[in-house]
Amino acid sequence: MTAVMAEGVDAGVPAHYGDPMREQRTLAERVGVVDRGNRGVVAVPGADRLSWLHDLATQHLAGLRPHQGTETLLLSPHGHIEHHAAVVDDGETVWLDTEPGAAGPLLDYLLKMRFFAQAEPRDATDEIAVLTLVGPLVDDATTALGLAEPLPPVGVLAPPGPKFPAGSVPDRPTARYPAASLPGGGLARRMSPSRVDLLTPRSEAERVVGALRTAGAPLCGIWAYEALRVAERIPRFGLDTDHRALPHEAGWLATSVHLEKGCYRGQETVARVHNLGRPPRRLVLLHLDGSSEQLPAPGTDVESDGRRVGALGSAARHFELGMIALATVKRNVPDDARLTVGEVAAAVDPGV
Image 1 (cartoon, rainbow, N blue to C red):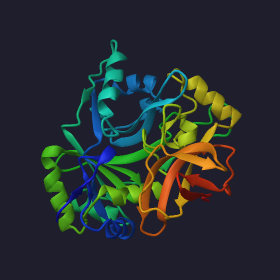
Image 2: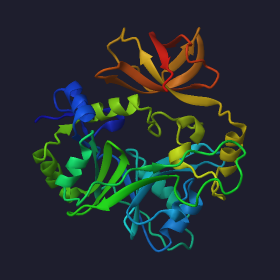
Image 3: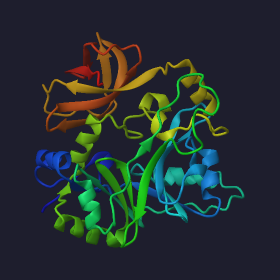
């Protein structure tokens, strides 16, 4: 099987293996494994790892239990998103996996904030490869890797309304992603009913992929994974966000922010925007008319009647929906607005 390698932000992993649309169907209807080994990984061992990270991040990490995952953000003093990471704790080390190229800046920030904490963050990108299983048969694939039983369901708390009473949010991560140790080393972390991330030692990655392929989970490229991600309105930091992005705009309030924990950088902005209930922008799914064979580039202006109302993020070709994209637009842009992205007409998918 010959891999065609991706370019741009996902350089270093296969874009596809010859038929990206078939690979999408595999991920949507059965199960496949996607190489996301270009993701950055930061390891944080140490007795104070959870309490220390808890004080820095938006999520309630002090309540994270061994073999449990979540998501978190690090914000600027004005509440803008500076880092996003998926998180999992194995009982001795917290593993933070983030976007390609983002591990270095994340580690730099953590080292500056360590002071006297018993925590030893390091760049573990060369140690750990992220592989992702996607599809309705994902539990069959994890069983093939030696897990005795399927990972439990994900638990995500709905954010409380504006000006909520104290005690509305339990002292726990707002999103809890069950995890388990893999027999050959590494961790499996459920992110949704049909997605499990495998944080695998790089020395074991080839063996893991071989076991999965033998069990009926073929390799699928990042293009297929990205098309399904865009259709599900799941943003990527730095691709679907800019330097002004707020957690509320990206849709990360439920999964990555605990609204009752305090003292982290940017908390005042998070609370103020939530209580006012009107973040200035929102993330939307766009349907593109397909008049151009080229996908528009991230950052392309989104316009309405010749006026700029937002910017494009990820764009993809979906096997059922055609050309789609995520975009951040002004909150007052109505769902039925007639939009253009460059020379291409676009329409907002109002969702459910």
